[in-house]
Length: 473
Image 1: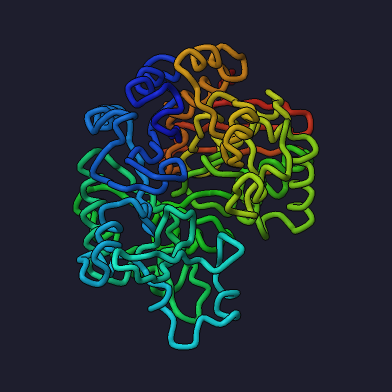
Image 2: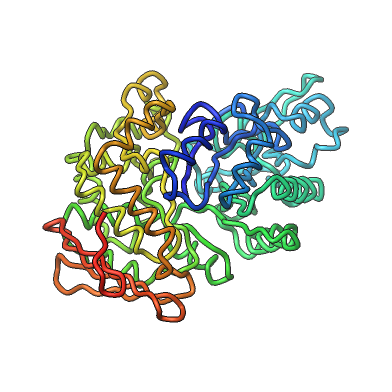
C-alpha cells in the first residue's frame, strides 16, 4: 500500500494516476490517499468539509477512478475538525442556539466547579506543553474555552452527543460511497475525554466508540483502522478485538537492527506481531520512538536515537523541536533513507525485512523513491515534518525510478504484490541462526508457496527463495 498526499507524486490526483500507471506500475496494490478535503492546516488534517475534494487536487471522479484499480484508505479525523468548518462557524455565530453547539467539547463545561487543578492538567496525555484548550470569542462578544488537542485550527469534537455520532456516521458512509475500503481513524486514542483520566485511550469508553463506528459502516463492507502511537500493548488490545492495527514499532526496531547488526530484537518483535496489521517504516509524520518501548530496552532506544543523529544524513535534533513547530517530542523527523545515511544497501535491506514481516507493508511515497531529507522545504517552512514531505514533480518521479536502488525496490514491491506465499491467513516462522542473521519464512494457507528470506544484517547480504528457487531484485 502506497501512502501519498494527492499532490506529492505529480501536482494532482490525475498526475498521481499517471505515475501509478507508468513509473510505479505493478508495485502498488492499495493507496492510502492522505487528506484531500478542503483544509485549513496540518497538510490536510484540519478538514473543513468532508463532502468535497479540494479543487486543486481534482474532484470525486478522480478519487473514484483510483478506486477502480486500487483498494483505498481515507482519513477521518475522529478527534477534531477545522475551526473554519460550517459547523464551527455556526456555533461561533449562534452559541448555544446553534444546532452544532454539542458537536464541540467545552473545556469550561467539562470540569466541575473549582477545577481543573494543576494535578488535573498534569494528568492529561498532552501534545503540547500547556493545557489543551483554545479560548474562542462568540459573535455576541462572550468567550468560552474549547478542547484543542492539536494545532490551533483543529477544534476537538465531543463524541458523547447525538449530533456528533450522527456527523461521524453520515461522514463515514459518504466516504465509503466515494470509494473508501478502509477508514483510518486519525487521532483515535484522543477522542474520548473523561474526568480523572489521562484522556488518552480511555477504557471502556474507547471500545464503545470503536464498536459504534464499526456498526455505522458494517453493512457497507468497509473496515476501520484505528491510528494510535503509543506502547505496543495498546494496539495489541485493539488487535484482540479483531481489528487491523498499525505496526509503528518496526521503524525503530529496524534501525536498531541495521545500526547494530544484531537480529534478536527484530526477531522477537516479528514473532509477537499479529498478521492483521499494516507495517510502516515511514509515514507523513516522524519516526515514532515511544512505540518501541519494551521491544527495545531503554539503552537500545537511546543508542538508536543517538546513532540516528550520528549516521543519519542531515538529521538534526533541532528539526524535532519547537523551533520547527514539532508537536510531538516522541518522534524524530527524517526520511527513512536518510536515517540510514542515504545508504542504498542498508535501505534495501530495511524494505526487504518489511516485505517479509507479518501484515501488509505500507510504503510512504518518499520511501518508495528512496528520498533524501528535503532541507530546502524544511527551512522554507520551518515545519519539522516537512523534511519528509518533498513535492515530486511528474518529471522528478521519472528520473528517480532510474536509480538502481529504486528500480530494485519496485521489483521487490511487485514481487510482494503478486507472490501468494504472503497470504495473510498463512504461516510465518522467524529464526536467528546467529547474532547477525535472521530467517523469515512465509507460507500460504494451503502450503503450496513458501517464500524464504535469509539475511545477514552485519554483512548486508541476503538470499530470497520461493519454493527453493532464488529470486533476484
